[in-house]
Image (cartoon, rainbow, N blue to C red):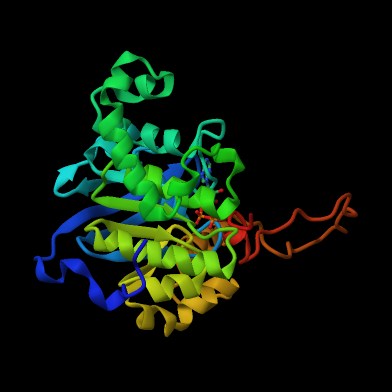
Length: 323
Ligand SMILES: Nc1ncnc2c1ncn2[C@@H]1O[C@H](COP(=O)(O)OP(=O)(O)OP(=O)(O)O)[C@@H](O)[C@H]1O
């Protein structure tokens, strides 16, 4: 991989007009009574690397799942290059959005090369099962696919391990392989869910260079990550989710300088925090429904037989996120 000179300031698409690659509007995802994502708008333009951050349980992965057809959003819509995305993940991949997962999902008993070849199934007419079962159709198309897969392995630095079983790769290399497999579908937008989780600082730095190089190939990137140094080094824009809502979006300096972001990460209350309005409504409803605190007594009150039930406190609405 030759990415040493690649930096945030050398976006390749600087000469091409800004084109909206991803346009998510009003995306809401409810699971029963829990609203994991609420009315989130997000765009990613060509040549951009956009970060999505937020405390644990903020709804980042759920939002990714809504973008990639794993979940059908309860409300809102997602467009890729102007076209409404179908609610099926393989169709979303075919449309041009690829992703990696927070928990690595490789075919562990297949070789490194085979994993990348499987990732190409949306771009070959033989399809997924042919690639997995290695039928005659697969062998026909194999040569061209194999050459492209080897290019991608070269790109992520795994070509020398092409014939190794995926499960024998160290953790950091498994993450790289996931990226190579995602790239095999020739996406226009790559979604990375915690690509540096479990990596040491050197691996993280290499991943940063890899993402710049992917952007330089003309692929827009949307990345979820808890490593703030990685995010702020890498991203042109960063959006912050808190309790399912977008708190702020801006360049790294803007987001880093916003006290509400720090407060949200520390779990401290702040004015206008997502969920505040709902919490206030709940409190108002409870206050309205609660019996008077001290009933006037003519006769002595009976002795309490049990402790009063717990009253929800201000911390309650956030409890669902303490995972
Ligand atoms: N399939 C599901 N069914 C019910 N609740 C869910 C489901 N998936 C996620 N949630 C809930 O939605 C909320 C958001 O979770 P999500 O995993 O999207 O957060 P996150 O920001 O990605 O968190 P982390 O940084 O820890 O990965 C959490 O309260 C979670 O428990």
